[in-house]
Image (cartoon, rainbow, N blue to C red; front, side):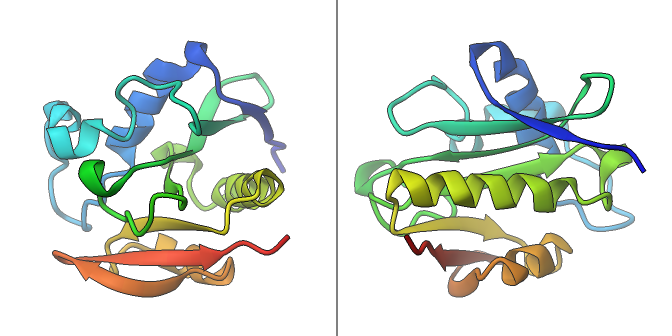
Length: 164
């Protein structure tokens, strides 16, 4: 069984975060993936653009040879700069993706577990996200205590309370 490690994201990981933003876009089985240009849509690019703001947190999963295979990140938004999954100014919005060849190997669980631990230590009351209800990741989020708190278009806004 392959072993994966996690490191804190840095400025050196920005290109990978852009790739993960693209990979995070849910595409149903049998549907063609959109053009990569989609991540430059203002509604999507705000998840990564100008990375390094106060409150930005990223974790990168690496395989045994040091290849980047997945990422999870959170960013704070506010009432004037909302995004999918936004519920409150003090609640970071989570994004996550794993490269297709590495899905189903426990990497998402590893990343989510560590990020929630760090957010709890940092004192955040909760974390939120947006997910298509047909995405298999919904089951992962539910295992970690995320509950549906709203509907935005066809996607669910989900929230997990963080307990200190």
